[in-house]
Image (cartoon, rainbow over all chains, first blue to last red; front, side, top):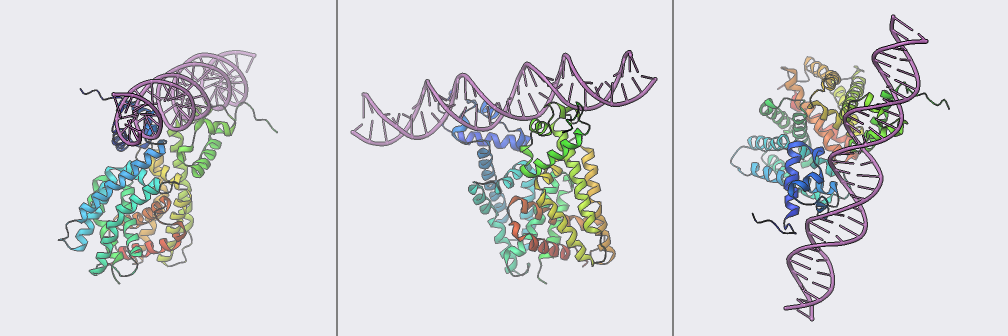
Length: 196
Length: 196
DNA sequence: ACCTCAATGTAGCCACCGTCTACAAAGCAG
DNA sequence: CTGCTTTGTAGACGGTGGCTACATTGAGGT
């Protein structure tokens, strides 16, 4: 084995990858910098060269999480051969899927938004959510959604999705019914956002 | 000063009160059992007589939180001299108010639901939410909400509220617009849940 | 080719934390 | 009064995050 040299060469990324894995699998609280360093095979103080403190690492994780979420959402949005409602359900499903599969990561992502000095996280969040605003505009253009400020129309829709995801990951709603719950929330949301 | 005796007499409750305060003010992560014991003026191992470990204390806190939430919701529901929509907005406001004022506590409350051996928390949660189910039934009775399974009708409504609260506490949506956002989400929710 | 120097990793320390166990004090039931 | 249970205390252990001083490395200028 090419016993790596004194300098790792890729420490930051490897730390992030490992950290994301243990966060997703065992929760934020279970993430220990020292344990992480041990797993990667590096001294306990090495991570400090790349992350000022534990919170900085968590912020970076959140940023990366928003990037992943953005990819998922854009992927779900890509095929544009469907009716608007169907596309909406597809994007909603992608969002709820991500939220339930990465529950702990999502909590981290939203935790970061209000912390000071986390502009990078906020920027990543905006980028991830941009597709949703486009979808709302599209719905307005084709007459499926009420006209007016896109935010006013989109916020109730997004709140429903986010709330559903949150209730699913909290165990308030049973995960087995995920599919039908998404359908129900989407349908109710679209009715509520329809032109009147 | 009546220097209290060896036995405190009311340790458990005082620990819970102090703990809730620091959780609400500084977040769950900032809660330290030792610091708590110091504040109450008791040895660092004393809390262990009342809470098996830190998680047990957090569970008790969650349980107490659901009790408080239930009181708020029932209070908002009590005056029944209004039209259904107005009552709904009032209850929704009470929920979002609680969620934003006790953001960290709420996170704790929902964290508990999925943890093993926390039936007491689940029971408290059910009790807190019971008023909401009653309100939905009432809306169905007076024709403001679609008939059918109360859960199918109520879940999208509740998801919207919970999501809105979550987005507000995360800082995704600005707290200053709380009032108008509640109005918007309530209106959209009611339209989506109306008979068709 | 050499030398400097910034970047990166290491080793050891500190205070703090949660948990465990052995012990002390207080209340209570007979 | 006596013994037992409850409640609080004291001290120890391993683990953690953060800090500082030091070691190693690689890259760029001469």
